[in-house]
Structure formats: C-alpha cells, structure tokens
Length: 157
Picture 1 (spheres, rainbow, N blue to C red):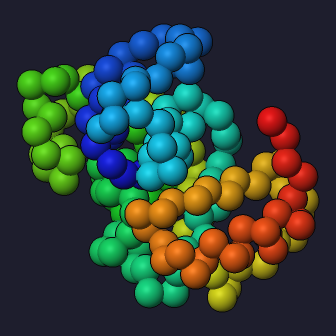
Picture 2 (tube, rainbow, N blue to C red):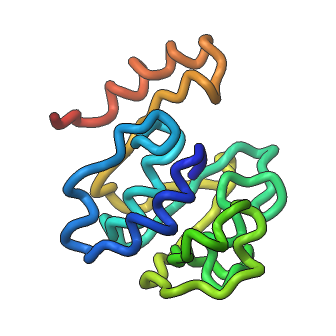
C-alpha cells in the first residue's frame, strides 16, 4: 500500500465525501494511482467488504509487511482489520510516525486475513481477482507468470 500516495489519501482523499472519492485521482507522479498503491485507493473508496492478503512465506505481517501499522484497526498489527484514518496536513510528515497522532476521523473497518501462500486454500468462488504488474517490485522473470494466471481469470475492460 505504498508509494508517496499514502499522505494524499490519508489527508486529502479521506476528506472528501465517499461519493466523490473516485471522481478524479491525482496525476502527480508521486501520488497517482499505480501498481504500488491501488489497494490503498480501493480501501479509501470502500470498494470491498473484506480482504484476503496472500503473501510470500518470508513476509512477517507487522514486521516486514506491506501494511503499515497505522492502516490497521486501532494501530494494532494483530487486529485482523484494516481501518484508514484521516489526518491533518500539519501532522503528516512521516508515515511510520502517524500512530503518534490523533486522527480527525476513521473509516469503517475492513476485515483482513493475512495468509502465507503455502497455507492458502480457496473454498468459494471469487468475486474479483486482481493481478497487478509491478516492475519495480518483482524480477523480470516473473513476467512469464502473467499469461499463465490470465488463463484462469476472465478479464473485463
């Protein structure tokens, strides 16, 4: 849920009424929608009711994860729910220090399961599958997997 967009989302986007949050996204390269931050934008727009985050075996949620503590319910890595919080521009200087400040408001929580890839088993059909291509985060050799995965999902424009 990265990039520099988090500052804009947690100050500017969350200040908007929910029905106006998806109207226009910033075009500034540091805050624009990208493979590194689309999940943060989707959460801010309340586009899903729950999230299953299937992660690499070396990732330790709360220690080496992609999800910063401030994005969790009550700033607790073990809470089992995301909860975005709106902050004033004056306090937003460091993403990792945001837990030290009182938010202006908080979004509804979103249940979150963090599961290591080897332990994940799907038991129900998916509503949506998101496949992102993040060149800055994966080696070029992983590109070959895109066509393999594409065979199992139905693409919509």
